[in-house]
Image (tube, rainbow, N blue to C red; front, side):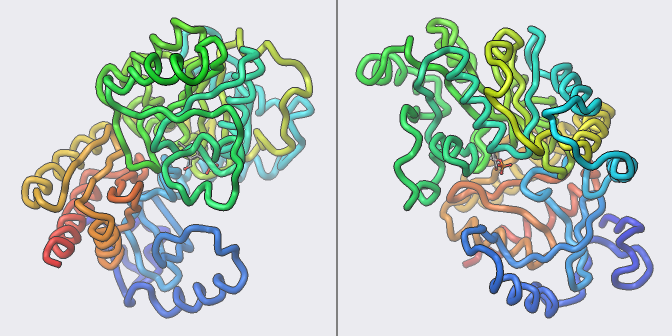
Length: 437
Ligand SMILES: Cc1ncc(COP(=O)(O)O)c(C=O)c1O
């Protein structure tokens, strides 16, 4: 059992209790009342996984509105990489908040350029890079595909079946993880094709289908991929797949865009998931874990590409906000200062534990996959995955479904060995209960 951090300990008893620490039914009375209120005012389009109402967080622990302490293996959808409210990040944000909240990148904010230089330093490309800062992952992807079209003067973009790239029109047009993301919104952005994902044999699709029957390669601007698919179900491609894509791109002058919004930020034990395959992209889109929860996105591109466009071609009022930059600079320091290594170590423990769970329940747990703290557990049905998610919640462990049959494990990178063990124990109990049905 892990100990609740001090800041949350006043919740139930004044003493640090073991986490999870459940003091009401879940959801509790205050949570249920809040959810009633929420339902009257919020857009029903917002997907709600299950009824957790967080009010405070520290490290890998969330305190809900009823004072329950929950172990967070979800990290606000793979965002709070340095844990909830890491003191160094909070201090840096508070310090910056007293100096300058906003001015806009249309002027020369020192932190903005510092942030761009830092992102360029950690980019997975050898060539010098330049950076555009946005507020979110979907904006980072939008900017990346605009740049790809602009720089190549080609119009077609290839994305992958199972991909998720965001909700704005360009990004949602690239998305192909669930039909409901397109339902009622068509037509999508023209000029987008979807390729099969993940197996080396799938790469034949490019020569045999795309370039032979649909469009010539010299009109394709970019191939965009998540090095590990996220929302589509935490799908790790076969060895050789990403390298094969790089080869196709090199043969035809096509740009390779890595959407590292979910897989980047140190989650796989390397700053960028694509580095696990030693492949250099031309453009990287990032957000989520890169700023510990402050809204920051970015696309990082080779300088030879980014310098093709000029003033006004792309811009934003808020992107690269000083508070978000302050949080991100501190986040990167923490990631490089040990959290990426911790992600790998804890990830290996979790993978081993989950694989042994799979061997106990082979007819229910169909696959365990992932790198570092980006782990997917695939079940035999959607209902089973949903039951495991719910059973975990009832025991005070927060996990989240991905795709149709997968439960993802994406805790903050500050996860301790004791927290990993507690999470594994609870996950095992949740699977056992779901398997008995
Ligand atoms: C791979 C990937 N790209 C883009 C996005 C969109 O990011 P945002 O929700 O910040 O717009 C997401 C969000 O889940 C994502 O996982």
